[in-house]
Length: 535
Image (cartoon, rainbow, N blue to C red):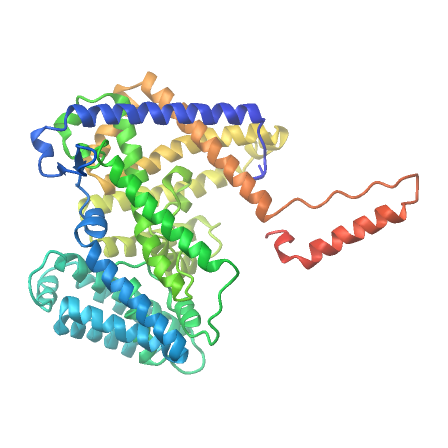
């Protein structure tokens, strides 16, 4: 089945209507549970007085969101504004030294916030991995980097290195692990790229410029060294047409999303409720399913906004940062599931694609996915929840390949050829529906808790069977079809169908006008690279 298979318009309208009604219905149940339990004792620690204008309490359970956009927003804005200001001054006076200014400001900001001993710790890791990279042995660089990363995940190395941070303050824990973890991943990227360089070695100054770029230092996203090196050392700093307008628009959109999320936190306590298992056992099936779905959507929104704010600053610096993660609402395949595109690109470049090749061999795919999730476990920190999450996601990724291989055999391949493309799309959407809920269940396990994931699965598949199960799967089927339609439209934009040949006016001759039109159309397609067929 091609991605461009279309469905009748009335069918798509029906799917959209069902989806909107189902989302509204689930949201109403979540709103009802939040309003009726606002004074619950278990809510007191996370549901606190909100904006004066609403006169309602606000869900403050997500420490990361509150840190960014409430508690420490002035500090973060001050640091990023200083970065933009000094970069702008340098770009006007001495643009050739712009990358050095990025490094110097980043070093100063890290020194000010965490102390000189922490800077010394970071520099020691950079020097260690730089020294290993001079040997130009890929596996040695990779193993050294992973061993270094492991020192921040196990005792007594964690406690010993944590003593390098001076003073006690609320952000100490977050900044320590964020700065150290991302530093190791950047150093591994640098070391592997240095191994691939045939003529000489990169200067250690390039590594320091790469690592101490302040917008990416503490919170990411990760840009692989090869991309950063090319972009930060451009000789000409020019912008495309309307680029500043697009950057400003993105900044305004992020600000609007922050306000909308904060407003919703006054009415829907989607982060606090999953922590109260006693309450969850008494809520309706629709409230529970809605909570699971809205938790994943919120986590995507949080990642998109946090990385979006940082990416806006980096785009002002003439960089092209990693794109925001793909929304969970647009996912029905394990191969496309990720919440941090920077980490995803890093893992694909250095592990998954490196070992998996074209990803069409079952054994190579299994080895590549096992190694990829092994590195991911080390990055997130080994624990029971992470191990279970990694196992199920790794299984789901390989299971997709096994099923695609199985259904490519006879008689399934002949059956698909014999039916229409629209019917093939509907049948595939049925299988994708179960895939979607597998992705939801596996990921709320990591975002919330094992007990919450078990309760959702039990209510959806066992206690709610058959009514809740059938309705939830049908709504998900409608969602998958809406996603497929969006993908179809995007495919038509990226890879338009060729123009049909102009029929001759009579038996064997064509008119000069038709010949001219055909020639013009062909020359237009040849001159425009965006019109070429994608591989």
